Image (cartoon, rainbow, N blue to C red; front, top):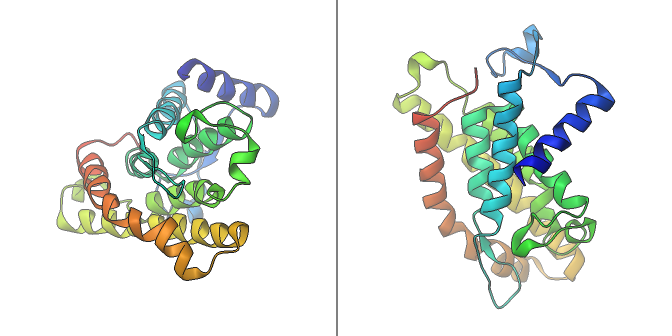
Length: 215
């Protein structure tokens, strides 16, 4: 899976040129300064590793009677964003989604294909990329204050916003495709999954404090 991820990134480079992004230290201020830096080989490896990690975490799933499994996908989204930053983290998540969309069995239960995204739970997958972007943007802090309460608070805020994005898009999508009421959709697609998000968020916050390859 890691090899396929690297090949996908290299194919993108060959067709569209060297991957680059407008950023500086992966912080929101980059949108103002717009300093262009190319992604290095190290950056590409980081992106590939986290895309592959998402593939693995998606398979750690517990089925439910109503068809939506408990998985560690959202943990992968959080870790990608807080460790890699909003730019590289979003790209890693995007590559994961594309791999699944083109048919690779990377979604939960070794499923793949565009039909999964167009299915009742596809809204959650569609929310992954914007969630990773917002988690990364809201959790950015200078290295000097990296281990402070302020940084942890930003991580909590970023992860909370990211989860709201994922579950909002997923719930509305589920309602539309299953003709469910909002009460039914929340009871099946959202509420049972919120409590397990807490330990995932704790792990991601620890990862954000201890590890960073944003620079």
